[in-house]
Structure formats: C-alpha cells, structure tokens
Image 1 (cartoon, rainbow, N blue to C red):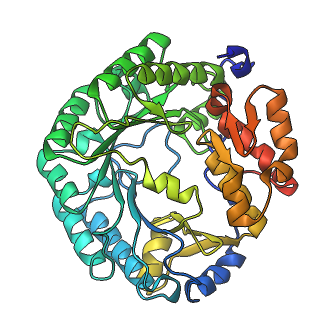
Image 2 (image 1 turned 90 degrees about the vertical axis):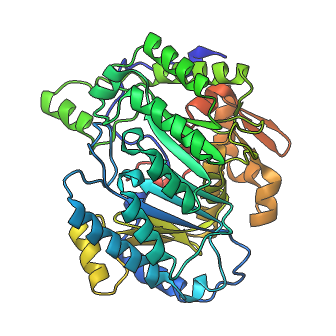
Image 3 (image 1 turned 180 degrees about the horizontal axis):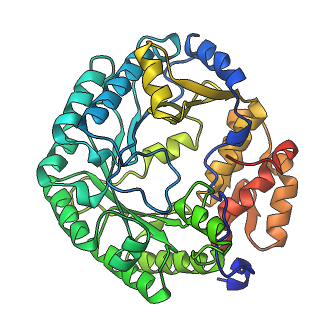
Length: 448
C-alpha cells in the first residue's frame, strides 16, 4: 500500500473525537425532539417484522476508569448502588413493554455493553435477566453479545453469561504489554487474559471476539508487533482493533490541557501503519478484513459452529431499530434518534417516577437516513449502489458525486459500476473521511 496516503504532520494525536458512530452529529440532538420519539414509540409500526430490532443494555461499572475512556462509567459504586441501578434498568425495560411500535416484535440482537458488564456478579446478572424476562425474551435472537474485562472473570461467571443466551463473548484485552496496560489505566494484566480466554473456550461460546487498541500510551512498534503475535496465537473467532483517539473528556486530554503539552498518543499515521501490519499478519493466517476495525476467521471456530459475522454491527449499519437502555445510552426507532439522561441521579430518579429517562432526540429526514447508512456502511470498505437504489430510490453516485470524486482523486476510493470500494489506505482512515458526506450545515459542527 502507499504509506504516503496515510502520512500526517503531527507526531502525536490531537485532542478531539475521531470515531463517527451516528448521523447527524450528536451535538444537534435536542430535548425539544423528545416528544417526537415518544409519539413514534406509541404509534404502531408500519411493518413490525420488516425492520430488525435490537436491545442495548448499558452496565456502567468498572474496577478502574481507563485513562482513555470517554463513556459514562462509575468506579465508586458499592453493591447497594449496583442493585439500585439494576432495579432502574429493569424498570426501563418494563416501560418499553407493549408500546405500540414494539408490539409483535422480537429482539433480533442484544448487546451488553459498558463500562464492564462482567463487573456484575453471577447473582446480580441472573436477577437482572430474570426481571427483564418478565417482559422481553431473546431466545430467538440471532446474536447476544456480552463485553468482558478479563480480570473480572471466573469460570462460574462465564457459565452464567453463557446461560443467559450469550452467543458472542467479547474480551477487552486491548494490549498484551503490562506496562502499556498500566499506563492506560487498565485494571487487568496479561496473565488474566490467557486464563479468561482458556475458561471461555472451555465453557464453549459459539463466538469469541477479542478487542485490541493500537497506539495506547507507551506503545511502540515492537510492543505492537508482539501484541499482534500473541493475539494471533489465541485463534479467536474475530478480532476488533481500534485506533486510540483522545476525546475531550478523557484523563489523557485533561492531563494535556493542564500541562499545556501534546498528548503522548502516537500519530494517526503511526497507528494506521500498525493497523495495516495487524491486518496483513492476520490475513496471512486465513482471517478476512470485514470492516475498518474487524477481522473474522471464516472457517468454523474452535468452539464449533460457524462464525456468521457481527449481527449487531451489520444490523445497525443497515438501519435497524435499537432500544438503548441504561444511563446515557442512545438508540434509534422509526427514524428518530434518542439518548437517555447522562447522570446517575437523573436516570434513577426518572425511573423511580415511572418515566423513561429521556434527555434529547432528533427526528431525521429520509436523506439523513440514507447518509447515515452510507457513512456507516463505508466502514465496511464498500458500498453497493443497488442497495440504496432499492431502499431509498436514490442514486448515491449522484448524491455523493463530490465526495466520491475527491476520494478517487486522492487514490482512496474506486468505483466499479454499483460496486464502490475504499482502498486499504482509505479504509484505515475512514472515520476522517466521513465528514465529507455530511450535509453542509454539519460540516463545522461539533460532533458530540
């Protein structure tokens, strides 16, 4: 690949959000649109079986807060606090039961995210599932993903996680160098990774994913190559690799502001080179690149069965509805984005009053729905113009002519009729390219 296409001037990573997770930008969602979401929730769906439906369950607890973390998490809550939150979470799930837009609909996918879902004890997890199951069941879901921090796991807890229907276990390894883990504020160390992975294989999850992060503080080329080697040896069913970013509300960003210095995170060019190295290494062992962040092993996994991709990702990137539950969680239903309140007190108190803990929302236009799907699917490295023609009755070659043209001029994208593909260089910096597809009024708008 042409590494010149990945070059950048800074030797470190600047402070700011890089990862594009939705559209339009979160900063334009407002409380004034919340009633629009409620009306959509209480209006019967046109075709309850046409659009896949997912459930996201946010567990906001961690043993430690990572220095690069920008999510709503808590490290100071005791067991009573956890039980209070889980009670509120179960109440929120109950409030969605029998809403008109959700009747006759089953969850196609479920995702336990955090924070650290595996922070919960086996008893706490089982009690939560028992309460949610009074209103919602997911035995027919195509995928149930559960995120784990290796140091929170025992074999018995993994057995409970599997028993609640988990089909895809995701281990947040991030790195195998203990000094890098320490500098990043991670709670676990590499010996816990190997033990947790061994237990997970023994328990027999249909799919095990491992997460890595390129460019953590203290990372070097040699350390990264060794991490890739150790990750490859695990023979995981899928591997997710992120490039370290430094959003404004992270400890790394705050330290940089206090000291008046740059961040200690390697440059984007370095991280992209490291990701490309990882991709090429895994590809030599039979893995396939399935997105800007993901590698999958297409052959039957060691645990048996068949890897069928990443349902949560693919469904959301193709316009699925998502009920997001938990503090600060966001979702999408029938053309309306929404997000829950982002404080502990606000979340718990709203549910004690028997109200959905809604904070802000945005009803989006048909054109914005098309743009949203296009930019998210571009993270797969390719777009199918026929898909958008059939679903939206629009020609993306016309709508995005300027963006496609500029990317072609830069050698980052090629068009073969309806098949539109990013080069490897384009895929490695895809999040930096996506604002080109935004409507003009959002070009200089803060993303979050």
